[in-house]
Image (cartoon, rainbow, N blue to C red; front, side):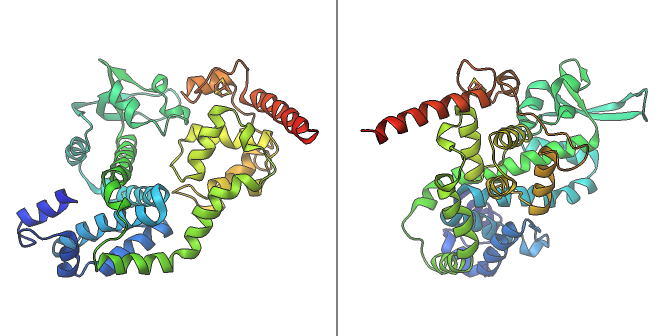
Length: 354
Ligand code: SF4
């Protein structure tokens, strides 16, 4: 928080030595903190962009992150990060190529801008322009969550002198990912403030109001969600390590990559999960939209489209996405699940007969 306060003090927006609680009172930012948290839950954040309101927005935004972390943990902060990055798409589309390059640098991505734009003629489509390029290392780092979609895989990119060429649409998509990462990293940055037993007034009052007004939503998503595994017919205990890890991340509201979503959904379907169970798991996702999730699950189950039921990934495929985290000696995660189930049932039978 010091960085934001220091910045506003140095720019003359706040008197020197102002602390966070004083800044909120001085700027009247309490109402905006509540709006930001509610916008995050609705999946829509709109930046207050009038110059005069920027100090207020900065203080309210960072306070909202601290309170969201205290009330709803990383799940709620991730929800805001997705909401912010999506709301930025419109703004990014309005920027010139040069401004996008400048912004990418601020976000830590070293981008090259080709003066002479490279054009690729596609046999079965129009020519494509690639004004931007990034090193393949930066590309891999910033597209971690996207590479489940084959069109983002490194092998499907145009490379020039060790750099990946990007068209404007894809470059903006990468910037959105970096913005989401930047917001969600504030959860770690403010971890100490999130652990304090109490905060000074007026932040305490805002927190109390949010806790009360969000109690229903949060208790369903967080409290019941964490206990959910205990009550469902699938044996989460018997999941292989890779699936346990993805499942845990989903329940804790982490933003799963496309490959992780596909892996856990197809695995659970094959292991006997029904649509309702899967919806419950994905409902913790920061970008959850029930209608879309329902459609995607039904598609994977073969209830829509061509009627094909999608097969879960093999261990080899999991390895290729860096999702394999142990050497189980099986060909598929499902095999490992059934082996674990057998062992588990045997142990339970033996303990019943003692
Ligand atoms: S070996 Fe297979 S089942 Fe085991 S962690 Fe790796 S992918 Fe999962």
